[in-house]
Amino acid sequence: MTYKVKLEVFEGPLDLLLYLIKKDELNIYDIPIAKITDQYLEYLELLKLLDLNIAGEFIVMAATLMHIKSRMLLPPDPNQEDEKLEEDPRAELVRRLLEYRKFKEAAGELAQMESSQKHLFPRLGEDKEKFTDGKDELFEASLFDLITAFTKVLKDVPKDIFHKVVKDEFTVSEKMHDILHILVDKPRMLFAELFMAAKSKLEIITTFMAVLELIRLKEIVVVQASPFGDIEIMRNIEPVKPIGPENG
Image (tube, rainbow, N blue to C red; front, side, top):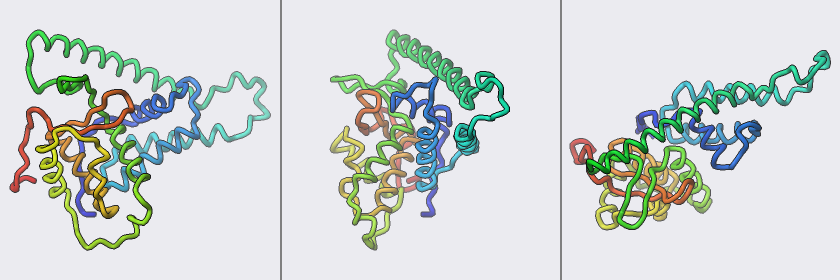
């Protein structure tokens, strides 16, 4: 694929680690480093498959995790008189995660305060965290939520679809228009529904890249009714940049 989506950095490696820890309900003070490292590397492989730009800090964190994992596999040093004096290889990473989580939670509280203040002077289309459709409250899904959902889509696809030879070629631009057209008749739909009619691996990947590009352009929002719940796609209330033949 020659088309490369250039995304803004929505989250960093510490966000990904916190996401994995929270998703699997792991103890942040006793991280199963082998499991977390394997999951982290799986996410990086998927990002490479999608030909997305991976920030250097993600690669550095991958190296850090593998280094910690290798240290934990080493047998205890027989010359070490008191094993308690030897710091847990995960200690520095845990400190970084706890500190980052503290600032992230503080930022979340400030965002909530800002949102509450907006209710006093309503400004439609500017609240990036919460969306309502008159029935329930929805929360914006993260990039990692999207990647998790996309991974599930790939796993659920029949194996024979990856071996089919399909002559049709798909572009990200065309898929962007297709998605927007669908949202005209169906303003809210499940993320997984976008891939139900896909006939090849290329079409699946192109559709996902189109979703990422529409998010970047603020044409659509991806939301969840609860953390780690099913992802839904909605047309943004106030699109910032219309998609047309000249810029699609």
